[in-house]
Image (cartoon, rainbow, N blue to C red):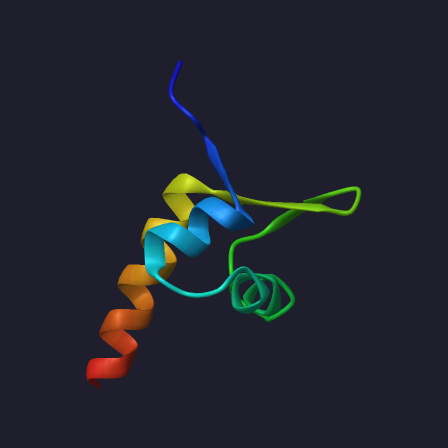
Length: 60
């Protein structure tokens, strides 16, 4: 079965930033994060879409 979400640690490793930075992103508007109790999970598809939007936005 394919994973639908990533942990903050997995996202940290995937995009090359620290776990605290991922948590900071989780608290910002527009970043795809779901809170389940005190645990943050990031939906795989929405993370890819967010990265694509951010890359395009930075190029403008």
